[in-house]
Length: 312
Image (tube, rainbow, N blue to C red):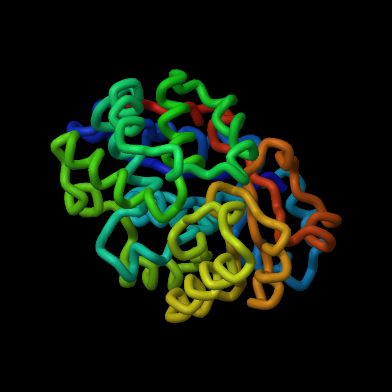
């Protein structure tokens, strides 16, 4: 079984000329390609894997679809398309956006880049705001090559690296707020119509889509201690408890897990958890389900035909 990961699946947005996303048209073409060549995993088929890991042999090369970040287009565009095809989608929700009316830092970064284009100007602005003492030193080396495989220009990669990984968590909101203001944007403008809400999640869950946790505030677990990480995961499941899904699923923010992650997820009764690291890319077999159910590998959608990102 192949697990495929998506983020933005949308139509063009006029005020974001440099935003990177998979067009809805290409998404449908990719699903056609998957159905013709592999087949799509259904809700019933995936549920059987919880108690019958050997059933995966019947799924052969079928595709399991997963969607990160709880984005609005996952309800308006993706969900109806999956219903038509009787395919399962697992949607991973960062629950902070259900509790607070503000965008996550990771999405503010995407929005800034989508609005302003190349990262050169943004990087220059950010470097003027960031003091050396505001940056991580202990774990910074872990992320040095994180964006090497992306086809972004170097300034964009460095901007993402600085804001997502080098800047300490306690300074991210402050720096991003200053950048947003300097670019003539508002934080309310970014948050508006960006994320799924409670009612949309209820509808999707009632129609055999799985809603999983993407932690609470989408913080990289490698920058958290065990207590902080456990709080991030537990809080997210508490907020999502109104859904009571058949299977409890989790997706690591930024696709990365710590040495504490497995124990934390096991203690919270998580059945399956998903990563998105290059060194873990592989098809899933029975051995994975039995021995590594909390580090299941995913492919990015751009690894397949029609999966290349559009811009603007």
